[in-house]
Image 1 (spheres, one colour):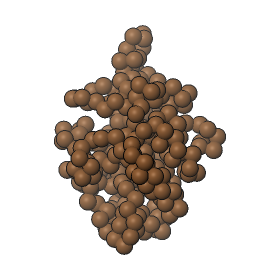
Image 2 (cartoon, helix red, strand yellow; image 1 turned 135 degrees about the horizontal axis):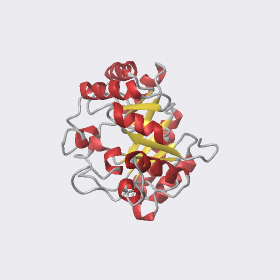
Image 3 (cartoon, helix red, strand yellow; image 1 turned 60 degrees about the vertical axis):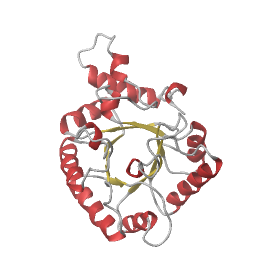
Length: 262
């Protein structure tokens, strides 16, 4: 899809019912994200999400998934060592995932990079995640745009190239300046999936509950309520239409506009 300049539409799901609607609307990828900590559990961040939580929701999503690529997050502290990372990756795959996602690109012995390589060497596809890392939000000082400074931007570009070099298949770029998202996307051959990373990423992902406007509290800038945008139409199934409008806007390069970018 990247080679053909076809944008990739990605959405989170945590249950069978929404999974069926996401497939009906034509999304390309479903992510069972640790974002469930906030939108399902009501936690202030993702740090309390466990492997058992991820496996529970993965099984329900996988039961309804027909053709869509299914990715599962490895939650906080579930990939601290290579052996633990592999063990938990296998558990997600056995629960129905096609690919696992984990955050960061640290180098050296005992690093995230070493864990990623170990997972890939055991034939499990990996999606990386750079930029704002929700599992490291406390170390980052909160939910802030990443990569604004030149040194940080250069490191992120190098990290993306490194992840590609060790065999990662896809990278999520979260909450970074649009120009940096464009630079990274053009610097690597694997797809980038943006969330608050600009229109030039190879695809876009949103948390489904954010897209539908049913997440409580203040939303990040990159969130667009597609249900509100759809509600003026005479439509019997607004949820499916809202999801389809997201997919169409991603495919037609109408989302995210500058209004939803940094």
